[in-house]
Image (cartoon, rainbow, N blue to C red; front, side):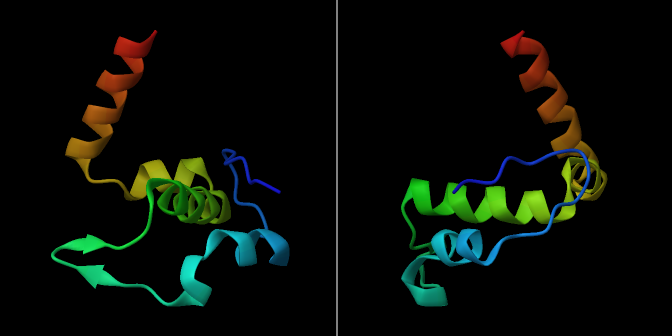
Length: 77
């Protein structure tokens, strides 16, 4: 089961929570990086953004990040 972030917050089903948190919830930090695979990081990010919703996520991004995101979305079109 995979979450799809939407504009508004969503509840996280327990199954998604279990599947999204690697290493049974133990996070490892090594040399400035969280020690998860790209796929594991993606699952955590998608789950967290789904919980707060895209609107709130955009609101809490630093201004520079919002500008960068807008640029990336324009370039992708």
